[in-house]
Amino acid sequence: MKFARNLLVSSAVCLTISFSTAHFGQASAQGACNDKNVIERLPPPPNGCHKERITAVGNQRPTAYWAQKSAEDHWQDEVLNRYGERYGQWRNATCITTECGPSSFAGFTRCTYAGYPCATKVQLDPALSRDEISELQRLLKKHGFWVKVDGLFGEKTHQALQKWQRSKNLTDDGLPSRENLEALRKA
Image (cartoon, rainbow, N blue to C red; front, side, top):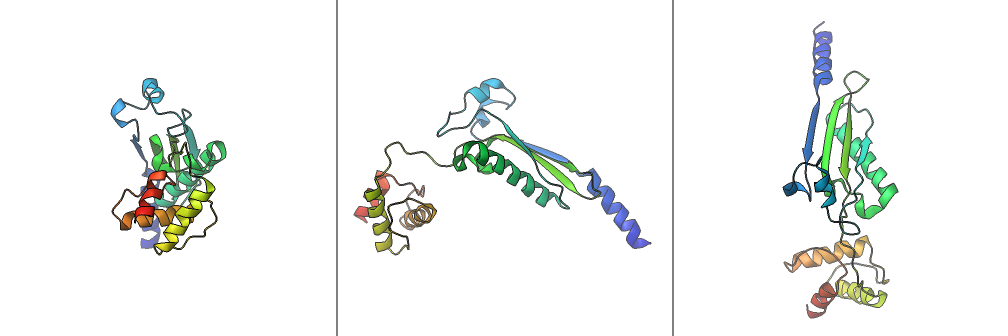
């Protein structure tokens, strides 16, 4: 009997859990996200934000944490399908809202995420040539970071460059820029 009463109480508590949060990324100082002027002042792609608000509903989950994770994954999938991986990080979105509430299953939660996708990495205009990226990879290897020297700047080269930058107390952007190549040459 005591178990049934505790189960009923915890089900009622789960059904009343409902919360909503909103925060501003790049538009925080410019006013509320419902103001169209704020959206128009966001920096445009390729290094800024898209003007289309993406909304995604996650699956029903037994805890708020997993419901939020599901909604975030759905939002990222939607953005990846529309704009590509440079915009797919929830933490870089602006004017985001998170709403969670009870689902149709007792004790389960469902969340909805909405926000404007913003670029995660700066797109470089004069990118390094393949030979220069190979040189950057050779220099990283010389400094003790394992990377494949193939002239392609991938995730492992990015991570190795960031680790090298941190070891030298430099800004750890991990970008294949001329400044980073010159710093590696001088080290």
